[in-house]
Image (cartoon, rainbow, N blue to C red; front, side, top):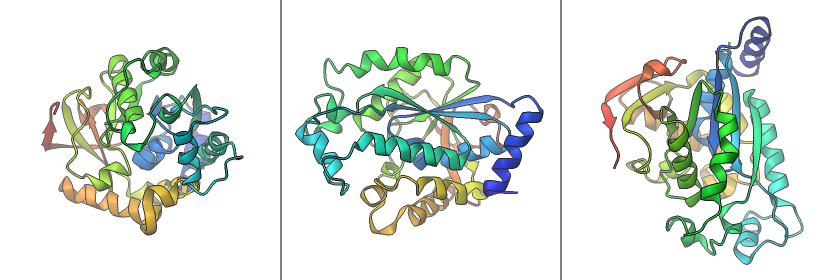
Amino acid sequence: MTGRDGRAAAMAAGDARRIAGRAVAVSPHLDDAVFSAGGTLAALVAAGWAVRVVTCFTATVPDASAFALACQLDKGLPADVDYMALRRAEDRTACAVLGVRPVHLPLAEAPHRGYADADALFAGVRRGDPAVEMLGPALEPYLADADLVLAPQALGDHVDHRIVAETVAGIAADAFWWRDVPYVARRRAATPWRCVPAGVEVAVDIADHLVTKVDAAGRYRSQLAFQFGDAGAAVSLRDLAVAEATRLDVAGAVEALRGPTADRLPIGGRSVPSAAVGPP
């Protein structure tokens, strides 16, 4: 049983028995967790887990700066649209498809925190960036009772992804770390940010959940053309899942997570010893 029927059955079963566990996926932006690990999240739900997606940078900021406004206009949205409210609504819809609970932390994205152009987003964390101090206290309550934490490896070097990775590493060193999409599709050989603990890569078979992931990803309509171009999200995500399987020399369609051991992942992930890695 897959897709919506599978999720409904799993959730109904969860009402009749103790929840298998509690997982939290820490997403920098309103789409990162679904694009990167949506198949894994769907697999957890199907296995009876309660899953939250906590997105860190979701706040509406009035009177956006020139660059922040440009980040909206280049998606084809007029200046009078509440861009972040629109994206929060997209995230709620996407999370409903997966059967996970969305949580939106009221922190501002990097363009609202003094990062003045696209190059600045990938040039390292600015001295005095308030998010460095604010994120930990905002995030800790959601991780305190989590049996499993998932977070980004920050492969694309985006400052918001780095801050999230650094923060999660300081709170949950035994987390599992996803390969950031769409960045990984552009840099297949990218290595995790230096804060991500050493471990092995774990191949999570998402073949039974890929349709659900693609459905959920498609709900981020404001982002699809910008992030996936002419190929589109459906083709790009399917191709990436197959490419990851090929890279790890396993069959099928997979998402690759970095973690301490496959034994701690409750959905049958397969450890790939040849891919064992340490900090870059």
